[in-house]
Image 1 (tube, rainbow, N blue to C red):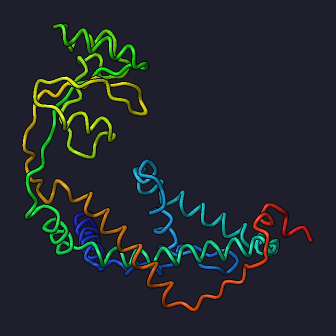
Image 2: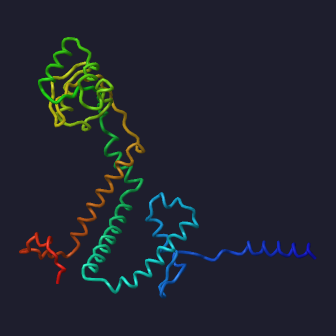
Image 3: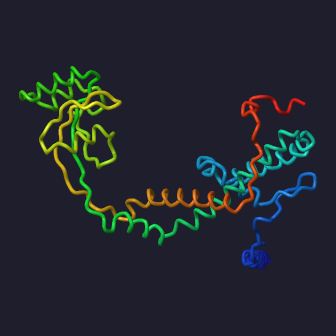
Length: 278
C-alpha cells in the first residue's frame, strides 16, 4: 500500500508540473486597496525606475518591497486626493505634460537612430575625409610671462625640456616631463593649438598665453590618424543623431501647433511672488 501511495503521489506531482502556468501580464492584479487594483504592470514600471543597486536584490525581496510600497502609496493617496490644492493640480499637469513630451521625443529619437542612419553619418564624416594629423607634444606651464621667457632661454641654451617641466610646470603633466601625449585638432585651446601647429618635430615654441597661464610647447612628433571604425565612434554619432532628432521634432511640433503668446505686459518678476496666497 505504501508503494502504491508513493507511486500515486509521484504521478500526481508529475501531472501538476505538466499543467500550464496561469497567464500573467501587466494587467494581472496582485492587490486591491479600497477597491483600487494594483497590477504587475504597476510593479514592473516601478522596478524599471530603480537604480541598478536595488534591482540586484533577490526577486522575492524586491517583489515584496515594491508591492508594499504601492499598497502604502495607494492607501495614502486616498487621503492625498482630498488635500489637492491649485498648486498641486498645476504640478500634476506639468508632470504629465513633461512626460508626454518626453514620449514624443523618445519616439522621434528611436526612429532616427538606426543602423542605416549611423552608417550614413559615418560615411558623411569619414568615408572620403583626408587623414587627420595628430600631434604628440609636451609643455611647461607657468603663471608669469617673465618666468616663461626665462625657461625658454634656458632651453635654447641646451637645458633639458623634460627636467625643466618637472621642476617648474604647474600642471599635472609635470611628473611626466610635461608630456601631453597624442591629440588632434580641436582638443586643445586655440592659442595652444596654434603654437603646436606652427612647430616642426623637435622645435620649441615661444611662450604662448592661454586662460591657464603661459605655455612653452615642444612638438615631439606627428602622425596621420587612422580613420576610425564605425564602432569606435558609434556613441558620438548616436548622440549627434539624437540631438538632431530632438531639435527637428521640437521645431516641427511648434510649427504644427497653433500658438498664441499672451504674456505681453506681464512683469517677469511676478514669478518671484506667491501667486497662490489667495
